[in-house]
Length: 206
Image 1 (cartoon, rainbow, N blue to C red):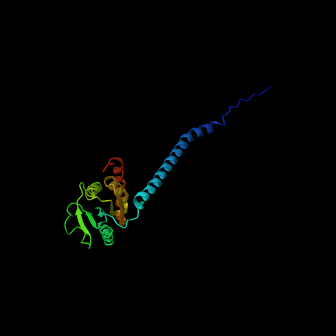
Image 2: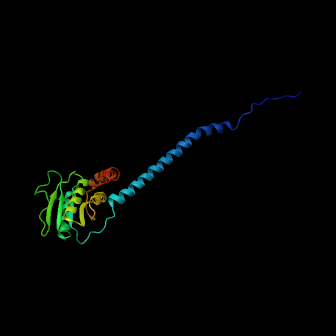
Image 3: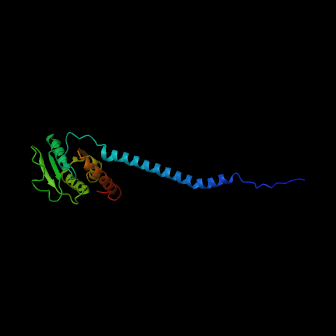
């Protein structure tokens, strides 16, 4: 007598297929997370390098032996800017020093003190921005036939200030920079990014 046994065959690949089905979405999510992470890191690196290049250590031409005027721009760190401007004037780099002041500051006790052998003036820009200061320099330079100016500002502001002034003044623009405190640096970087974007994207003329 032949005895036949029936066996239920099992599929050895079923568990593997189920595991693959579950692993597929997880693997895709993992790859997506890695890619997003890499893009984020790349953006941080690019942003950091650009910040260092434009705001922390901008490339500026050396100051000349003589210019037609020294113009101190308004902004953060005014005491340091005053000191830098006075030091330049005492080196007789220009016969005229002009200080940009905000409304309410353009009084005799707020302008720079007298400097022997140098004419000292103040003005309030219209509008009360770097663009207004650049327009003043362009108009004054055209009226008095200036060929070069030295502008005094903070290092974080130097690149954008030069850009603005060069759009209004056809002569040579030099920049002397003053120091900023740590807290001012923390405030200046995001502000300068926003202001530079505005100058490059929306206000490309004088």
